[in-house]
Length: 386
Figure 1 (cartoon, rainbow, N blue to C red):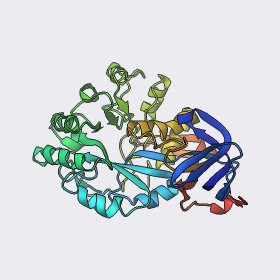
Figure 2: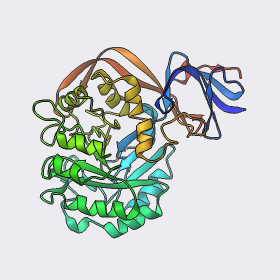
Figure 3: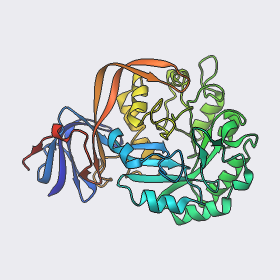
Figure 4: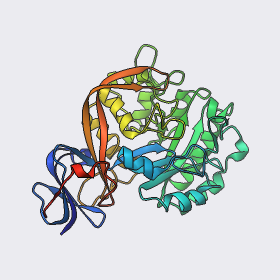
């Protein structure tokens, strides 16, 4: 007897290369069935006419609400945007990690994983009126404590985070990245590196990254764009992908440009993961949320299956947790119910360019840990006698 069956939806699960109508069942917080005409459940919901995907993973968020000025409320965000797992990227460092874990992660309903910042207090000075790059002050780098905290919290910490660039690290260049790489090597975890304006250059940074490391803000505008002025992909970027460096979008307030994205996609260079980099300064635009960021790529011509893979399967593999981002039997019992609206929709990037798209991905409901989790329109999914 299953706990819940979603019946009759168009199930798109890139982890199983599946796109078609069937049922998905959940029991005990796990996926317990995947096939046609599943029967026997305490609750059956008719989701015909909707798209069912593995629970969306936002690989770049800032959800240390109350602990940092950029943090948003993860549960509120996830309920409305179809995200079941928020990956916080460096809001907390070793100095304030215990508060993040106890007061936010352990108190919330939605799943939260984290990259731990190598800077002692994480991203502590990111606000509308105060903007202090935490990597500018090398005395704030705390590699020993970072390694200790990461090693002791492997259930939640998936990697090490560092931010470099003119805004984040001033004139320190790649020095903070060097320290973060030492920590990542020490604990055997991947590194996620933020890049903004030079110095250092995009090329310098990706040359230092190892297979499995992630460059976020990968499709940012000039300067430090991945594309050349001629619309090609920089040779150093192609070489980095070939050796296994991963590329995450991290839209945010200042890190995604349609011009760059068009050039990258035209050259067949798809992002490994699509993420919103949602925080207090971009949740009301231009990023908004995960499904809006996904919609931008759909309107730029990226295939729906690829867009979903970049928010499910690829994210789970980047996290080295394949049970995330999949609807295989035995995987986490998370699913997102979507629709694609047709019409005329305005999207903006971080430099103010407007894109008028004809499609919009909308979250209609969420299954979290095998149960309905505040579906926005639960009346649209009538119960069926089991």
